[in-house]
Image (cartoon, rainbow, N blue to C red; front, side, top):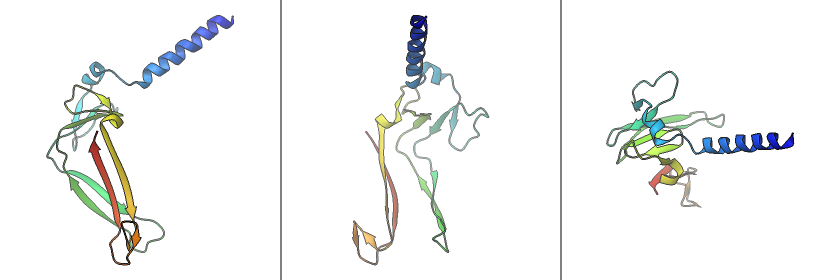
Length: 135
C-alpha cells in the first residue's frame, strides 16, 4: 500500500518540477505576440513585445503620508534591441528563450535630497534610479 502512494508522490513531485522550467519555445511560439501599447487578449496569455527604438513610458512617482506635495513624472526610455517577454522568459529574437534573470540584471537605488554619493552635502537633489544591463 505504501509503495504505490510513494510512487504517486514522486511522480507528482517530478511533474511539478518539470512545470517550473516553463513552457517550451514551441509552446510559446503558438501564443499571440502583442506589441507594447496594443490591446492584449482577455485571457492574458500572450508574449509582450518591446520594439527597439520606440519610446516606452515609465512613470516615476513619489507619494505617501509624509508629503504635502507628492509628484510624478513620465519618462520615455528606448531599448537598443527588440525584447520579447513571456512570464519570466525573455527572448531577443522571438524564437530563442531564456530565463530573464540569466539575460538581464539590474539595480535600483534611492538618495534623499541633500545626499550625494553616500555623503550629506545639504544641496544635491534626491535621486530615484534604476539600471538594467545585459548579462
